[in-house]
Image 1 (cartoon, rainbow, N blue to C red):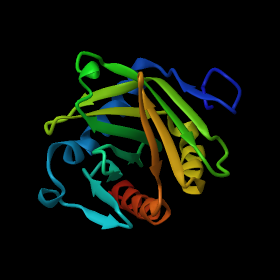
Image 2 (cartoon, helix red, strand yellow):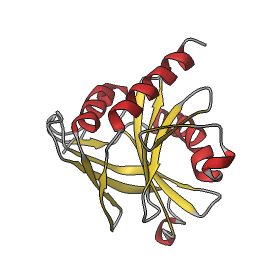
Image 3 (cartoon, helix red, strand yellow):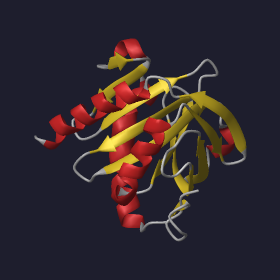
Image 4 (cartoon, rainbow, N blue to C red):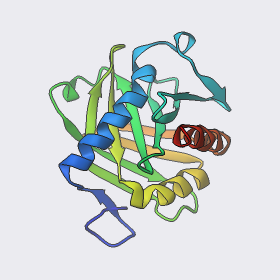
Length: 188
């Protein structure tokens, strides 16, 4: 598991509140389209089942499963941060919370297969979806990208809710598109 205060095999986010606030603002801006409007109403592209979108400052890749859980990555190229988000319907127990634990377990040969953020930001979307957004900072972007890229599934837990295991098929091509989007954003 990845934790900032523990050996590299475990990363757990603590981070200072100012950096978290800035990163959270950027992530929220990136996720607003995904949480607020149906896909047909957004300016997006789709690659191998992953929707890609940009706010002009961040780029997002996300996919939604049959159980209405959405998972994805948010790339903030100017800060170098890559965040992970999980969103779902009727997560009422999170409505009054600002943060929640988000635990991820990836299969595959990634450098770090267990990721935990005890203070993932809770975001309420306009469509009834609630998201938990984790950001381990720019220092762990490459490790998270490699972990996601080598995994075929991720098991997600938000607070006390075990969401299940989700297929990451197609994420390699979507991630390359996410990085191209980020390069365009960074060049502006």
